Amino acid sequence: MNFPLYIAKRYLFSKKKHNAINIISAISVCGVALATLAMVCTLSVFNGFQDMVANLFTAFDPQLKISVSEGKVFDAQDTRIAAVRALPEVEVCTETLEENAMAQYKDRQAMVVLKGVEDNFEQLTAIDSILYGTGQFVLHDAVVNYGIMGADLVSTLGSGLSFVDPLRVYLPKREARVNMANPAASFNTDYLFSPGVVFAVNQQDYDSRYILVSLAFLRRLLDYDTEVSAIELKLRPDANTAATQAKIQRMLGDGFVVLNRYEQQADVFRVMEIEKLISYIFLVFILTIACFNVIGSLSMLIIDKKDDVRTLRSLGASDRLISRIFLFEGRLISLLGAVLGIVLGLALCLLQQRFGFITLGSGGGMFVVDAYPVSVHAGDVALVFVTVLAVGFLSVWYPVRYLSKRLL
Image 1 (cartoon, rainbow, N blue to C red):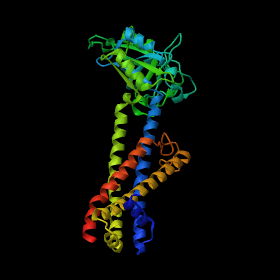
Image 2 (spheres, rainbow, N blue to C red):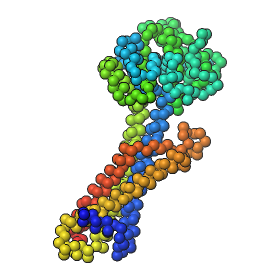
Image 3 (cartoon, rainbow, N blue to C red):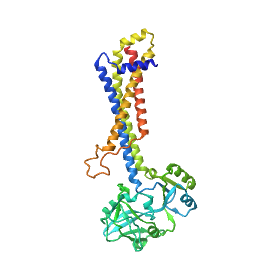
């Protein structure tokens, strides 16, 4: 039996001579528990927002995206790309081409990004889940070409959901000098019509700039044959994304870059990770302050147990053993607070996931979600538990040694 631990447990749960010590000990446990609860809930809310944003991008971004490390376009008929298409892990493969352009609807103009995609783009992403309108996803027919705009871009151009007049797009001619006498001659122009739908990713960069068009339409405007900006992939459900990404990177070599969904939106997720890290650091400071209650509780307990300490010394206990008793006392308070805080934090997260009782603003559809999203990650829970124990153990080590020498 660990004798110091046994005595520490008796001191923690037994009644003291002064009732105030019991109250202060309970407050110490509650302080650590509340700080732990705050860490669990805050990190879980950040995870919830991160998962929500990832789901928004899922409807537009591919699972894996292949592009060149230098330059804008590459030949889609490259033998290495053909080998990637034949991989058993690949379920859908589509060619895409992106280019900046100017769009004009009646008297309004806007700088846009034309994204040319193949007809199987619906199979690649969940684009249907973010389409709004009475039409359907169609990019061309035998007569005209269609353009599916972002919701904010529709508002900027004032075209409405199903515009009647055609949308005119301008792209500079490749390797052509600007004719100052007739600038219009330096641009390739064509018209796009509305299929009756728009998309809304709820991300400003997409909704205010992008127009989905057919790949053949954009290639014709750019005077390209088989060039693409990227090859976008959807993997089979049983395929491991990270392993497949590494495998494709090895096949293609250093001239290509293979990105997963998080890497395609690295800036967005990096900002969220930094915010999460800063919040974690601030909560650690709050936890450290909460541990001062533990030090106060131990100080009063040491004074209260002076007679017991004399008895233990008479029985042969060393100063080191007596210090370990109060060290274990402080550590038990931290452990109890950590366990209690994690249990309460997980319960609160579960209630928020199920009922969403903590809402964003006044609701009414002003936000993408009505309530704070929550996603509990086992790694974060383990990090919180280790952090609480580490801070709690370190915060009582020096005070206990100091108080033991001064007060006993």
